[in-house]
Image (tube, rainbow, N blue to C red; front, side, top):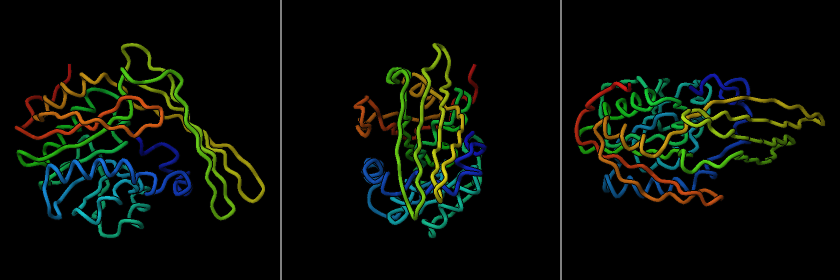
Length: 254
């Protein structure tokens, strides 16, 4: 899982240059709309797994009573600074049990760090364990096997207080029948007239859309696939909205 990756550990001080709540404003409106449609008015209790620095969460904190979970204590500390009203808990979304119920459970881009069907199902079952029947689970994988583009690359440059960070991400093409993407991340840091390069190699998961559908059903959810047109390359994507109908039928993936 992502807690051992460098941006969530020794490079965490550079996160505010890499990401900000403003970056999530457009896509979070899709999530807010879905939550309001499903839950109705009121300050409902919701649980977010894998909140990172709380940039996405910040768009829900005023409207809902939010509890946030993440593996990285350093990232949680960044989130506490911008989301002081949110309850923050260190935990693994595959296994955590808070022994209380919420109206909704959401997972933003942290879902990408699940690299096996076992991880996916365990996480869906954990989400279901925190919901009453009729509760809502929302997630949105960045890639599906059907939509991934070979050699996908992304970069940004940002500056603040004399510091410049250029971030470059390159995703390998997944091997057929494999569920792993290798993501090479380079950080070009210019500070006080000196430039240095740091790197991190991360692994993320990639699955066919049918796998998401099957495993969500196994965890007790009925599924709505809502168009989620947020990517600049125009690829097809979906906001996956699950409604809990029953307890998980199985927690085993053969």
